[in-house]
Image: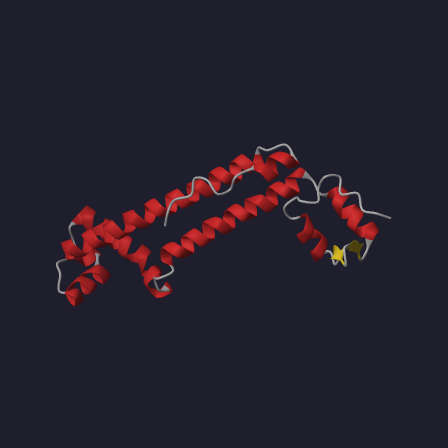
Amino acid sequence: MALDWNGKSALPGLADRLARAGVAVGIHDGQWYCSDELAAQALIDAYAVQDAIAWRQAESLAIAKHLRDRVVGHISPGEMAAWPIKRAEAIAYAQSGNAAQAPMLSAEAAARGITLGAMLTKVQANANAFAALEAAIGGADGKHRDALAALQSFEAVLAYDLTAGWPAV
């Protein structure tokens, strides 16, 4: 029995689905082989456009993760854990003018030898830069996943360009 790929042989995720099911398909000495043709054919037949879309959406998520990792790769997790605290203190201080509402920022400013106002400026600039990059990455990822979800054919899923529209980081 020869497998009927129904035009699906190049579809994203199908080879992975076969492998995860324990079905080996490939070429050896110029000949196709399959470890379980009945199981392979059932998986091929069941592979739907939504499966290919989900695979490509996962690719988009992976691109977004890679970009996010590039943005914060040089920053320690400990520092990033303090960001929400620093931002909350900066907001509280900006609203009240009371330095007691920004104890972490006050202590860091003192350790750096700068004013609390200068420290707030630095925190806000960093927060704005990070927010802009996150918005651009999240927006591009969401746009790609939404566009993929709207596709109706295997051909359209294969042709969809996941490389466009990402921010430079």
